[in-house]
Image (cartoon, rainbow, N blue to C red; front, top):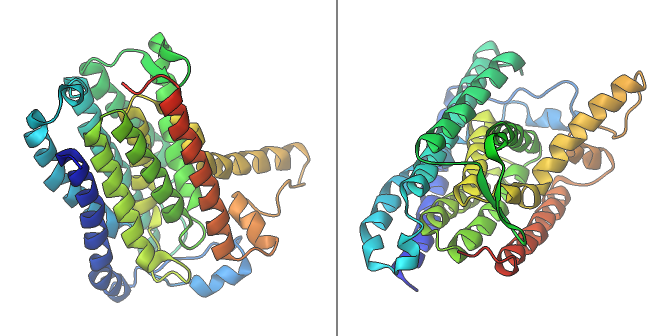
Length: 346
């Protein structure tokens, strides 16, 4: 295993250790501060037992991931001169901007989530920022990320398996903005069952570890490994029955990093297969709302997002997490194979 591979493994282990260990400090602190979750009245009745479970626990993996990246990414760039020239070819100013701007994309979305969570807790109700406030802030963050890429030389080029380089021209930017904001919110919607968003994001991050490594983008693989390790460390406390919830602080942060990884390897098209569960969660909400309005009160699903539909159909939370994770694993394997055989490894 070369130096970059060792750093990738270290990133996963370090992020896991920090996140899991922080649970022993942060969860009691959240309990003392009475930062408990307020359960929506329209949600499943059996979720009422979760009332008061500490939220904003996403702070645990935010710290774990950021500390890991802060320690190991500079180390990676410091030793990269000893790695083969194929890797160095990927370390252009644009590549580094994608990496660092992507990290700040996640942090910025996490900050929006933190603000939303804080308002909810202070007001003791399940409402935080208004929908308009959220969307404006989210668009501003995504736009800032794209501006950073443009300044560093990002054109309308992207890469698609079996097709190769595609130049979308100016359409790349509004499309990218829509994708980032949409999927960040989709990750947020997925966080509705103990361990679901954490598990799905763990397997999505593992997929990006493989793809980034195959493409010799080891800086991105280190970030992906940190995300995977942080998610696994959080699962220690978040798996059913959850002792803590990530809150919008965590889900928006993970959504930002998920998008940053896909754009970081210049293959945002992979957001669709790798994030298939996020897409289904958001799609189920949009379908439910549209159908409800068109039919004046009828519903497609018993409840949306779709994980609640399966809950209402008798599935346990563990079964939902297991099935949704299995789907993500399958989609990840297909994505990796597409990269391998799609002619875009370098």
